[in-house]
Amino acid sequence: MQKVNALKVLMIGNSFSEDTVPYMPQIAKSVGMKDFEIGTLMIGGCTLATHFSNSKSGAKNYNFFYFDKERDCMVIDANKALIDGFTYSKWDFITIQQASHLSGKEETYNQDLDGMLKYIKEHNPNSKLVWNMTWAYAKGYSGLESYNNDQMQMYSSIIKAVQNKIETNENFFTVSPAGTAVQNGRTSYIGDGFNRDGTHLSLGLGRFISGLTLFCSLTGYSPYEINFKPEQMTEKEFEVARESVDNALKNKYSVTQSKYKSKD
Image (cartoon, rainbow, N blue to C red):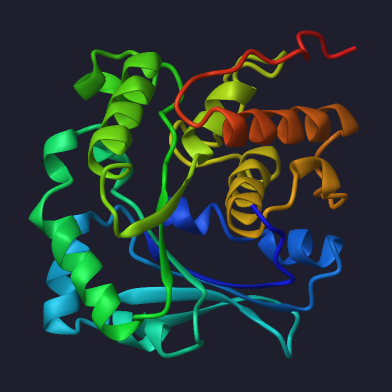
């Protein structure tokens, strides 16, 4: 993939998309990128079905979390409709995702997804569509009950759904494999330490991995070209993050074992 020197990406999602965008401005700046817009229209726990319903009703129940150039930081505007985010910028990419608890349920990638794709195309015909592959829950989290309390079963179910329903859909430009990047990282010495509450990503390492995955998926940059590191991350964690993302970009649908087995 040829590198790009500008990036304008809007995510349509939920708290998992909110976990993805916080570090993307700093990641973009670290490679000298000046022309970028980054945002997400989110409702906590929002499913494809709810997004599609909101597209028809025009409901103003989204938080629009975006990078404000004048203030040089991410900000949130409440009570927005989908169309408000769509018209904020001329987006190069628009990402969409399923709610985390349904992300491995292939039957939910249905007419609601088709309806959303049609709606996006109608309002943003020049934007490339991207699927944001979310991650499996941490071991022991109660939400794993619908996946036999098995993290790897949830991960495998997500992979199967994306391969069968997204990869075969010609509307999508690419898949951002955050779920695989996180699972790769779990094979390192860090283990299952990428979540802050069982579902959402840790504020440093976890969020950085998801944002780095999306940025590199859309721009053609290698994770090893990114020099920005969140302050709360150690140098070793930084290397695990870049390795995990690099391996996910090379092998989107299978786990690659980390070489970082020791903290020392």
